[in-house]
Length: 456
Image (cartoon, rainbow, N blue to C red; front, side):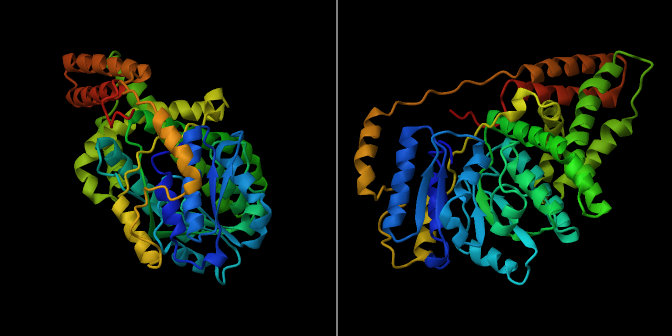
């Protein structure tokens, strides 16, 4: 957690009500918050569950070294960790069901070479706005196709950083959490795979979480998700070649796991649709076949949208928006590949706490009917933290409403595309005109920050 006021209570609650023997589990709340008010709120929530008999500890770091990887590394170095065999990891906005451990831990029994059990993400706000709908298409393909296929055929896929259970021995054998990139989850998964550990993906076990609802938050998240893999690729390329895994697995790691989705596709979309196609409108002797502009992107969009059939009405916006996001992804890819300063940035994705409080109360009652259930989960039950919370309440300042941002790169490309569309209209290139027009409008909408919610 890091200054995540909106979601700390629900994530702590859903973990504490796990249907699992309490003498066989320990909950660690790892807090990197530098906001004193949030720290005290989280402490009060932890104390509330301690009073209810839940084995839970609060850990706060004064210096946020290594971001999430540093936090996990610090937590796993505690003496009491040696008393446990597995560790389940959840980000601050994730809400596992009460039977999460019962559905995942049994897979380790009899499978001594199994290092990771990964579950699927399910989104509480996928229908909140157009931006979240488009994200849902992308992530549905990732989980339904990429994770599931790799899990079945080669017992390897990228750890998603949360909603998964690791065998602690596997983490220790591959070197534990390293702070060298901003994708510590992908890093540890690759090293564990090279050490011979197998992974299992459970598509039918779902863990609730949130999608970013503002374009600013989504853009920053995608920058980290595309710059980090290129950082990691530079660092572990030689290790992959020298490893003892089969040639097929090496090829899968290099070409499919790293290069295809994180480098080739963003490069293809950016160079073709944002540079080459508009330029051909001003060079009569240069022509791009219609199938390159329409059929190839169309087929790719249909394949991506198949795992989310309810999203078929959004296939055209999805194609246009993905081309628009190629600017951010291409920039991130370059910064990660050549290790520019922006590739080491870690900005916490803004959460809004969309889950229902009534659902949490229902979970609590179902998990432990002996608990006092007349009090809502939002109330602070810690007497020790009540005075601090009261003082903070009187000093809290009202937040300011954020104005729309202007994204210059997107606006520049919008101008180029719209100019090229006008040129194609004059030269009677109909299909190119419509594509350039709608793609230019999409860049303009994104550049003016008119997609997604305006989060203060």
